Image (cartoon, rainbow over all chains, first blue to last red; front, side, top):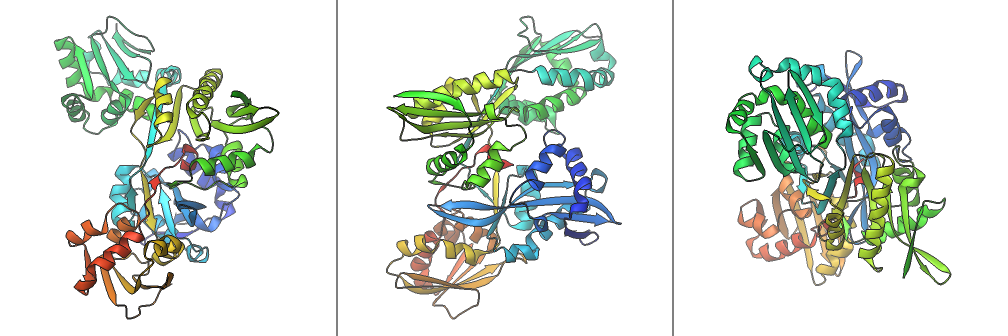
Amino acid sequence: MIGMHKCRAFSSKDSDTVRELIRTTFYDFLDGNYWDWKHLRNPDFDPSLVVVAEKNGEIAGCGHGIPREFKLTGDVAVDSVLGCDLAVKREQRGQGIGKEILVECRTQETVKNRKIVLFYHFTNVNLAKKIHVPFLGDTEVTSSVKQFYKITSWKNLIGFIEEKTKRSLHEMMSSKIRDLNFVILFRMIGAPPLTLRFSEGRTRVSEEKCEDADIIIEGKISAFTSFLGAKKVKWQLLKAVLKRKLKIKGKPRKLLKVYRNLDFFKDFLETVTKYIR
Amino acid sequence: MEYKIRTYREGDGISLAKLFNRVYKKYAGFVPRTVDYWVWCCYERPDVENEGIIIAEACMHASKNIVGYAVLGKSGNVWELCVDPKANKKQIALIIFKEINRYFRRVHADRIVVNVPNDDHVMQEVCVKMGLVEQTRGHMFVGIVDFEALIEVLRQKICENLRSFGETFTVKLLNARPWINSSFSIKIEKGELRVSPHLTSGETTIMVDSDVFSSIVLGETTPLVAFLKGKLKIRPLRKISRALKFLGAIQVDSLWFYPLADFG
């Protein structure tokens, strides 16, 4: 419920708590060092544009604003704020804290004092369409950005999977899958081949072009990320195949078995998706 | 023309910031570079080292000119990529990209990510030639908190488009969020524009949902389409044409582009 938390501007004594909150929320790219550079060491840093939400005297969430010039047209630029790094503690989510922080960011006295004309951000589109667009009235602008991408090596991903998910992946598999030996080859355009091998009760991930793969999944990276991270993985996979964004070849029995047990690969699939993104 | 590649030297920030602003002048949505901003954003970025800032110079007689550069993070991100369009863009881009590949191999980066404008076909061709593929782009959202100030800064552009206008418009924003002024007036006369946060008895009243107005100003919706869909009311009706022309004049009509470095 909105209004049950107290929002206020950031102060230097909040640094350690906010840094840790950011590190645990955006663990893959905003470690402490990065947060310090992005905010504290930013020559334009304005603590009054960073908002923390407190519950029972403890910081439950934070949102950051970085003042910037923002190019509009020709030689015209306006004073703006980049909204970024909105984080709410996992156990405090779903209570409207994020929304409170976002509103507080826009209604701070400093926004008027600095004559801020607009806020802009690069929030995840699903989140923005759920909160920022209907609640704050933000508009998605038609981007003229083309992002080009190439994965040169799966080495780091393989290392990560082997350490963190190998055991859990094997534990999750049903006895039906465990007895089955098969190899899945992922051929993503713009990336080396990635092989997932189940054999003799063990799983192995490697960067190799496996000629004897039982199942081959081919397509653009974007097609993989759209189904790999989806909640309804099976449906997204079917959609991608029907729209010809993905091609799947393989032995029918093994295809069916893997498809039926797709949920057991969720950990692996989510790890790959996060890595690609 | 001979081109040489080198890495960053102290003092390059001035030339690099100038080159960036010149190359991306026609776009909207990025931070115009100052030296201070460029140094913080690129040189001091945690995953950028001196050897990761690649500079291409054109060597002509005794002088050297910076004609392109790339700022590379050990993460594999190409934070900024700039090539002077007046130079031999494709050749310079290819030279820079070869250095990009070399650097990323050296630091064991496992990916290459770069943002290129939609209409920069030369750079896109070079990316494809280097084995990169296009992937789903990010999304950018803008929330205007001060419409009057925005219209004020666009005054020159508006007055150039509406030279012969002599009109006062009253804009009433419906469903405006609490931090937005829900009504204001704009007077255009003899090539001058004045915005007033107070309502004055304007000749023409425009009533529009705040989100729709934002969408019009940011160039995402045309005034005519909004009007035909009933999302825009104009009174009196005989002023429809002038009101639509005015709304067309306040639209941001640049392409929206941002380098990875502006992302955060």
